[in-house]
Amino acid sequence: MCAPRKLLPVLAIGALAVATGGASAGALASSSVTATTPATLLPQLGTQASTLTNLTTALKTSLKFVNTAAPIIGAGGLVYSGQVQKSILEQQALATTFGASQEEETYKLRRNQRKRELARALGKQRALYGISGVKLENTPVDVLASTASAFAEDDFYDRYGTASRITSAGISADNLRKSGEQAELGGLLNAELTLARRGIV
Image 1 (cartoon, rainbow, N blue to C red):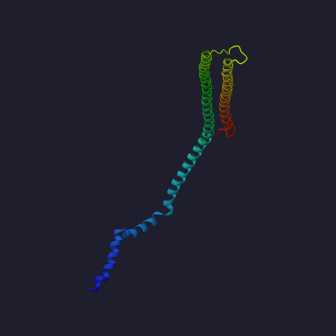
Image 2 (image 1 turned 90 degrees about the horizontal axis):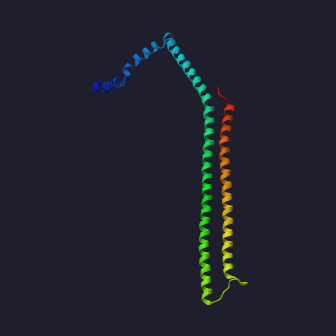
Image 3 (image 1 turned 90 degrees about the vertical axis):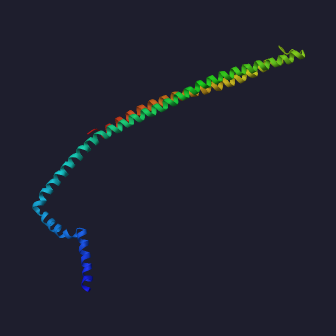
């Protein structure tokens, strides 16, 4: 009865070794020792050396292409950036020009509205004075002329302000267009400087 109990741990350890491959560990160790002799290592080292040489050659070739392509890519990016900036500034110039044309159109609408209001005001004044029988035309206090003068003054101020805004918008549009041309030229010059400084290998 006592002997089988002592054998159980030994059998369990043996079964565990067989299950995990431990039984062949000794064989693997002996084969690895025989496989790593100097005679067998030389071909492996030669293969690794040729692989390293091939990798070094590939890296040198790729670095040469990168050194050639990097300045060209950078210069192309600078040219493209200048063109994009020019396009944005031209769009802003077009928007400014459109705003100036709209300013002129709205002034014409306001002027026509003032003319209608002036005609209405003069008509009311004539009707009031006509009913009462009083005539103020060609007198030192000509109410109708004074009303017309007030409307003309309003129109003058409006026309002056509109002309100033249109002129300012035109100058801004011209400046935006010139800035766009300068941005494009700047992109080209920066690209040339990039190629000149870094060079192409």
